[in-house]
Image 1 (tube, one colour):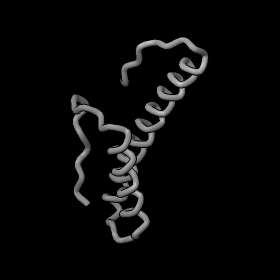
Image 2 (image 1 turned 90 degrees about the vertical axis):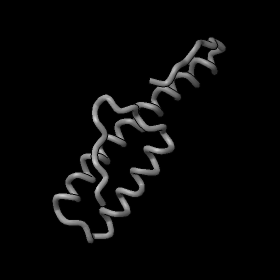
Image 3 (image 1 turned 60 degrees about the vertical axis):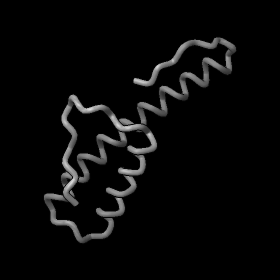
Image 4 (image 1 turned 135 degrees about the vertical axis):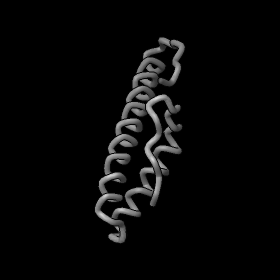
Amino acid sequence: MTDSLPSPQAEAPRYEDALAELERLVQAMEGGQLPLDHLLDNYRRGVELLGLCRERLQAVEAQVQVLEQGQLKDWAPE
């Protein structure tokens, strides 16, 4: 797998895209056919994607709590 890491200026992927990429990385790593350097690159990218997914889920959970309390506020994904 030759996925390169995005530049810091690159736009973050959508939650669904990040999750799909994370699933692909895990499958490739579990396959046991990648060279060690690719495993490390995939692991690093997986950590980035996992962090992104967690942040997005926490933001949505916070918004749901606001809605449940009847305090509708504008929300913009980060």
